[in-house]
Length: 345
Ligand code: SER
Image 1 (cartoon, helix red, strand yellow):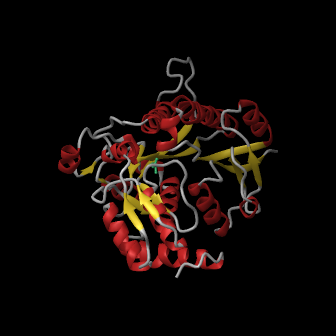
Image 2 (image 1 turned 30 degrees about the horizontal axis):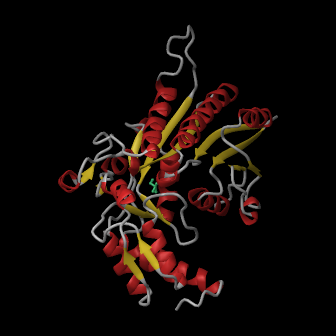
Image 3 (image 1 turned 90 degrees about the horizontal axis):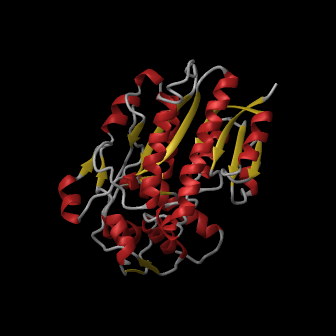
């Protein structure tokens, strides 16, 4: 018999690490972690198996299928929005072809298991593209179906990933004499920018939020690459994990969409700095907008309307801005850098 495991791609990334920690703490250890980068040792210890490998490596998937039954996939691996703009074709390959490989794996697994494989896909605020700042201000909170005109390769890839998932769930091989009886139970969440106390992001465009905070905590100066008045939605990492788990556990019949917005608070960059200064008064932050990265954030909405997620699967964040900074971010970041002795006060 093949062992049942939960497959997590992008396991060494920010969300992957937080998800694995959370699952392991709640006693779920049958985790098959996959990442193209080395998976940190403490994290490996929390998994049944941790593999350094590429989601584009179909031979690797072939081997996994022969050994493991996979009823649940968290496909977290992706190249984020800033990084993707430097190598758009590589980003497409990883973000789209990689997702396709995972969806094929899911269909194949569902055939073996005789039930649908759950496929949880983090999408992003980057799927939205507003043409200018007046429209951004006027539109305010956007709903899932509005302004799906992304300005980045990453946004295009995530939007298409959502459609691929919907296709595999509803229409896969629709002309076959005998349509697949099981298939993929695809569920996507459009996350805002995420802020973790324990890790920092790489290659995103919302990175100015977490970077400002982590630099201040370490006592390092920070040059913020967007204007002070730049506004977009954010969320504390524990709420991102909560959203993934809530959506995964939601009864299928309650879900009226293949994709859901979630959000928590939406400070301007200046307001993030005010929070950072309240905790670390010596913070040295200057605003030196990079016009190109600024344009990316300017194309993202000021907020996302998450009423559909609230209605269908009872979503609500635990951490508003106050709680996020006072109870999660600041105390944990302070402890973290004090422990490694950066001299931060
Ligand atoms: N945090 C992501 C990025 O900046 C948005 O999903 O690319």
